[in-house]
Length: 289
Image (cartoon, rainbow, N blue to C red):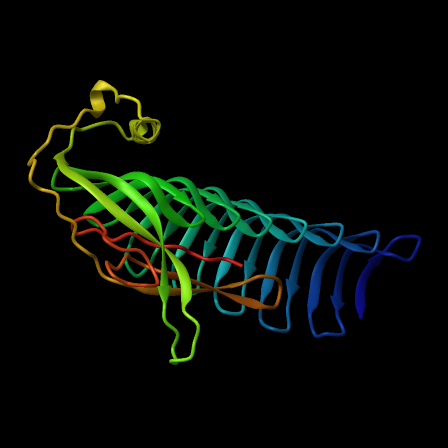
């Protein structure tokens, strides 16, 4: 059912209201029979989109309210989240940054509501990839991520004035099934290989990434990055706690998908990371379908 303007060819053209057979409704502008310009689309499921359309698809700036209570505000291209945008998750987590083809991609900041931890860095196809920083209440981790997991050289920085350099190595382990006859499951666990705990020189935030790149390349550091050993015998690694958070995010107009991630590293957990540095927690992979 349609109530609105039409052009000489009888096509929906201009402002109009439409009730679709599936119970959805649209109120907004059309051009040559397709949604075009500003409009409001209400889904029978309770989802709602208010924003721009181009040739019948969400395109431009818009806000989408999902059935689970989550909300996305930002850019759209061809019916998918694209460009800069903010996603407010149902569990109060927030992601603000770049999107590509409905997935987090580019530079962005993800804030974990339960812990207050933030990940600031690079994303690729919904996963953390490249340089990133995990910022906790009294310490942070800076290093490279690969396929949503920390991998390679990095360092923990503590508010008490020290830091610990080391490497994350991906270790494959076997985890037994629930029942006796179940086949063992092989999983890859990022494991922290810690170095010495050293006193930290004060450097500019802009130098952090350059320093890590020099570390990875094996080059010498600039004067401002030189650190002095605080205690040559201090090389402890203390395990942090486990947390778990679940996000729900709709993959399209009407269907929700689950997005699961754990909030920290456990030293001997078979399912996640292990042997974090003294007093350290590191948020681990976020999966987005």
